[in-house]
Image 1: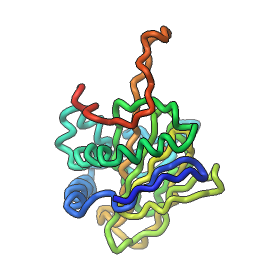
Image 2: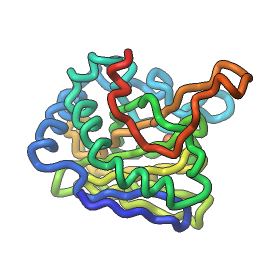
Image 3: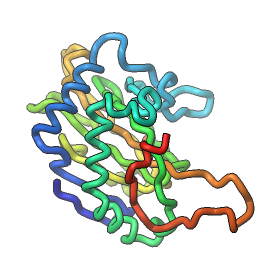
Image 4: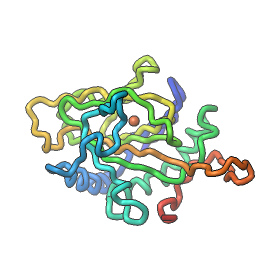
Length: 234
Ligand SMILES: [Fe+2]
């Protein structure tokens, strides 16, 4: 796991060699399981970002892991179990990232995550959008080697089209205000269910909403990146 905090063109954390080989085997068991007919959901079924008029900004199919496996049932997902351990390992880097830029200082302490498994095959991408409501967002990427597709980079058109290459077994964490999109994936003559496209595990790290206007009732919003045991509270 090689993590790097970057502040230009916006504060972000990138990680290469995210998971070890034995962990990747477990992740691929699950990616392969979901890449079967009838399992992945259409964009508007899994809550993709929408254009005005209600059309989805992506045609990629996905599976909403955490809403299907909430609380303690998350242990039935290899991806969710490994993600929890991965965030623990990354805690110091996430803290360093949050301390790297003033725009992140006041991001509330996270209390929950919404994690989706998303698969991009030929002609699939994602138009630019932001995921404002969350504390921060992480994306991790997987594909079969040798790589059979082109495209699939994460791009940021508000930042001179800065791109993250989305290498296999890498992760990027971005602030919620940073608009992002996915370059269209291209694969020639390949069956959808080959799984030769681009997999993204997208994790929306959330925080507890205030339910009172009385400042005394508010929990202190600390500059922590702790995701310890939040799933055990359910
Ligand atoms: Fe997004």
